[in-house]
Length: 224
Image (cartoon, rainbow, N blue to C red; front, top):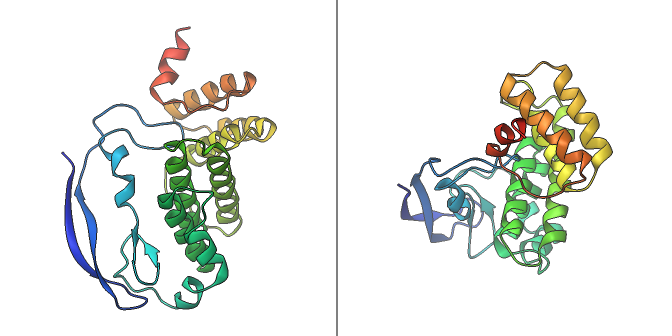
């Protein structure tokens, strides 16, 4: 069961108190995750609770009450304000992308990448947001690459990073890069289930398939 609670939260940027929804518990018993690690239900439907937004200053964060350091200037910057209300994206995607801008400013490229990927998921769920979803995935890719260059660890089993990046390349139609990353991931000798995911991705890449697929499809593909 998913449980939420409405709480009074004081914004760490402007001090305004507002009602925010806090996710207390959920589960992932409702099926298979997507290849880009989007979880199944019931957690799949809690995406809107992964980010809070101050109604006064527009500060976006998983918890707007936690210390924001020196982010006030970024929140008030033109780049941030334009993204916060960018009509090319659903509102929730704007909020995730705004948070991504804050994380880039802190050189936290892993967090920036995940925020951008969550924005892509929001776009996936919205009508006529294909281009917006692609933009978000390309932004996530850029941040994951920068994270690797800066030595920021992808905290997951060997091969997971490559499997995710392969999916981002494939979903954005960058098939040469996707195939190359597949082979790189396979060379690292990941766990068998990750090897199978990468091999499945190679099938999709050969077909130039840019659609969303789920991990549950991997086992089925082996029997075809």
